[in-house]
Image 1 (cartoon, rainbow, N blue to C red):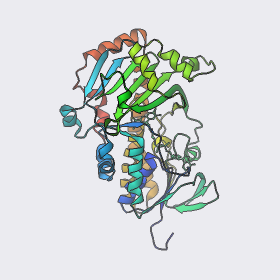
Image 2 (image 1 turned 135 degrees about the horizontal axis):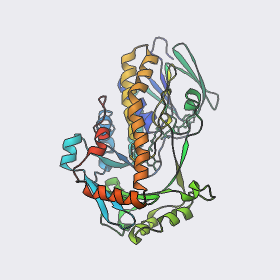
Image 3 (image 1 turned 180 degrees about the vertical axis):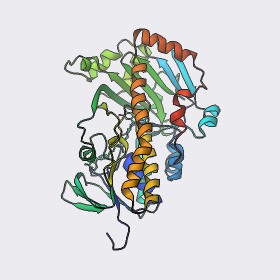
Image 4 (image 1 turned 90 degrees about the vertical axis):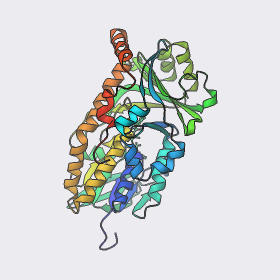
Length: 394
Ligand SMILES: Cc1cc2nc3c(=O)[nH]c(=O)nc-3n(C[C@H](O)[C@H](O)[C@H](O)COP(=O)(O)OP(=O)(O)OC[C@H]3O[C@@H](n4cnc5c(N)ncnc54)[C@H](O)[C@@H]3O)c2cc1C
């Protein structure tokens, strides 16, 4: 640290959350160092949905304009029954939606989003990006935090923000609540050129086919040139503690009772890799002194509201505002950050579980769901109003 300079804020993890926080802090004039475990900063090659709650944040961070040419604005969020293939309900994303939420809903390739944040970070002299620096442990002494990395490197900062994801070692030390909760839900993804898509009935929308223990999401990316396909199963084998849960066989079996045209969409899904879904119970002790957590490290959620990364981006703008105002009172700012973020992120986690149960329902629950969905109007937004209207700091 240069003598007289304000000490750095250390961030462990350079995912969407960690880099957003670095950028937001830098724009407030704060020096930041991002310690990333991987040899390169990066994201997986699939899509991500972004609510209107984060649009103004990404605009203000100077990120949106960088990825704007690749962003897609679906005309509607369509829910269809996977068993019959019939549309049940839709939320129109046009004029009324914009009137209600001021900003649009959009989808983007994760690498376009993460790459744009990274590019903006690289342009800021306040930010030092340190790949191959996996946080191993840390300690605190007064108003300083000391981090040791896996290769023995050591850093000193005014604060540590653990943005190190679902399996966060920072969380292990701060909260100590063990492994995240295994939901028994498994995700398979696939990205294919749009011209390969056979069923072209919802090309301009974000469509979700929902069925017993399953759903399949489709939306286009990169100016509409590629189709992002995501199939999720709630494994019956897992629930019964049988072997081979979450496997490609499990995927085929669970989708076997879908309408042929929905079952056929599995052709776009790669079997090479799956994502095992976890979340955690909301907690109120993710901050200790000058160390706190952000994004999935703090409040991992299932993806049924498509808001995990959105929450990380919201976290970033809240924490940067509070740290900027704090002067030397960093611990108080971090405590206030957790307080401001707790209930909103808890609501995302809990509502995501409930949405998952509803969309994966069968029997009477499915009949009731379909009946209520069919009665909705496309301009009824009450279910997502609290979420999409965003936060004050945005
Ligand atoms: C199937 C699926 C679909 C989803 N869809 C959406 C969606 O549509 N919209 C949405 O908003 N969210 C969505 N999410 C959630 C979203 O992907 C996550 O919430 C988000 O990526 C979390 O970002 P993060 O920066 O907190 O964590 P991560 O992206 O996990 O980043 C953590 C970073 O920390 C690094 N790291 C790990 N350990 C260390 C260490 N010891 N030291 C230093 N660095 C370390 C990792 O290498 C990584 O770069 C989805 C999730 C899933 C599984």
